[in-house]
Length: 251
Image 1 (cartoon, rainbow, N blue to C red):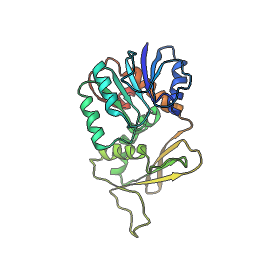
Image 2: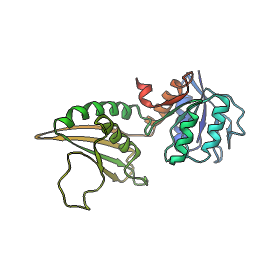
Image 3: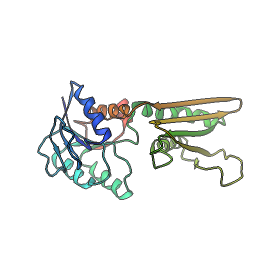
Image 4: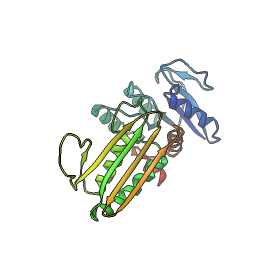
């Protein structure tokens, strides 16, 4: 049985995870951390880790960078690993996370979807073969009209993974309207679409001479991110200190 403390339990993702854990015989949420009013959860909810009296195997954080230091101090003090699903950290906060990983296991991923993380592995292998064969690489990502950042963190993570496989020789092109020039061979184009209620769609296009290869992932609900976070929470307890990724979970 995996005992979980859920930070951000009253947010949208927190409630999705809560419902998923309630249906799981091998996991239980022993406490929640959230500054907002309780939603009548079946577990105790505290406004801060300083108030938390529950012991857990792992913390799932689906909240915001706010009060990061408080969570890290609690986790280090209790020897509790963290599945870090929150994004938007500053460089200074990322340094704090890296330092904490020298004492506890921390799993951090730009996207908790198992499908996206498997897709990342496939793209690295594809990029090594197709780029050498002269294929151009483009990424098109689509999200709902309330998403404020562009391109998405996942699109950048996919680009970074392919670029790493290619020796980091490629530059990213976000907008072609500012200059009149042919496409460079050493670039990865990244385009963002915002509209409606699109949960998330990422398509990578390998365009060669007279042939096209497309690898695409579509998220139809937030449940896929909750599922990935829960799988990561079951994976992390008992692991040595250090930084982990979802790629470690899927093997």
